[in-house]
Length: 306
Image (cartoon, rainbow, N blue to C red; front, side):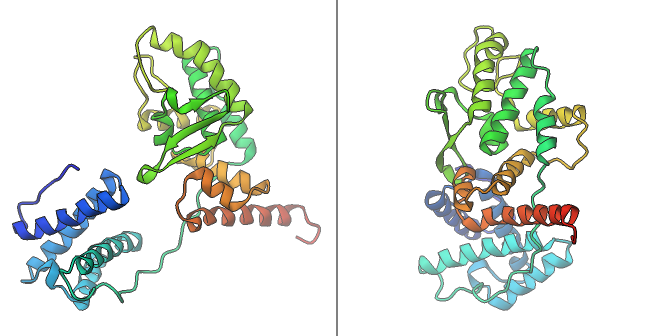
């Protein structure tokens, strides 16, 4: 695991942070970005305590509350403060478990109330327009069509899509294998439409784009390498403009649309959870709110007493 040390902190403080992050990495398999965010949060607390002649393992509940209040005064949003509190709780639980502390000072600190934003999904008509936007008589257009079809058919994260390897697709069985957050592997069915476009891309466009160059990644650029997440996000926005879609887009719009449309058509919530790779059902449940809002809109528009 890569480390970024902070010369402003005493060596002992930094060592405690790194020991915690090492344990977290081994136990939970968190991503480098998540571990870096935890490191920044703990270093920020350690510096704040140091300025008040205190240390991480000396902090009491009142000091942690004062720190979070100070973060709020500095302009941190409730969601950011909630994430920081989650990090502090993990650190202090680890310290108690390791015998470094007798009690957890973060135990009875309340997290700020959050209004959970609903994921934005396209209508089914907008999805159809977006999928039809790339020119499929061109190798790059055929690649884009296959990527969009695959993304909507599977609900993959964009990072999972651009990193997909040939060995992870079984076209005969119509499934793919992907590794999501925390290194968790899941199997996802492809669907006939996505399979057809994927097969056409592999037979026609990919060969022409690679021109004999080796590449394990399924979706490639004209230079023969894999796409980046940023490049694919640019492609989605360009095709959305071509399709005349005015709805707000995010890199995960098709993932959100996949989940919402499945629920709209009667899919079981736990099935959607498995397909999306969510470890907690509560993460998936947010899509039921999106589906319910859509039902209310339809009722209001079409019921005689709506």
